[in-house]
Image 1: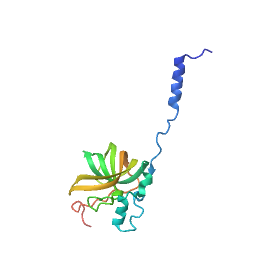
Image 2: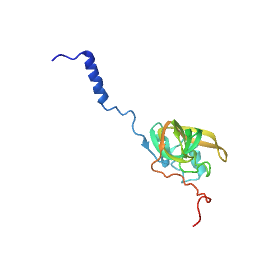
Image 3: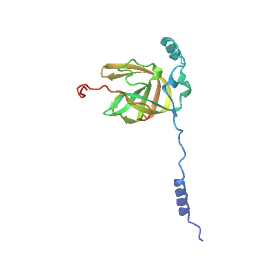
Image 4: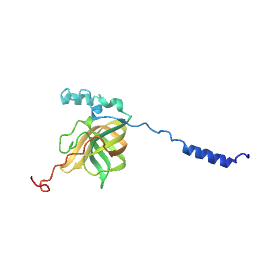
Length: 182
């Protein structure tokens, strides 16, 4: 039997490498809930005292900083073009910041989606995955009832965004003109 030519050996080696499973480049993001971002004392003492602790940098979510996380919430667009949303606030409940009071800054995550997310509606339930960063920011954006100013403690840049699987869509009011009374 004749030895294989060098080019044939290279081709066989490349084919064998192509059949090997690819190494996992990144670990699965760690699923978290909104409680993981709350201050430990939040809800058990007056809001002003909890906010003072936040201002001093005492965050419950500090152990999550720099980690790949996944969290579900409701999308409130900040920057979009048509249906494509590039930047948004992720909030724990539908209506936050526009129809209801703004949650504390540690309960809002400023998200930069890459690629843009094709949102179907405001307050669409989504799952966001990416690296959690602590960045206190103040962001202005326009809502139907005027300009809103929102403070956030956390940011996720280069975020992967997909429809949420474990939270329900926002409740939409029924239009009385489309539904007959029974």
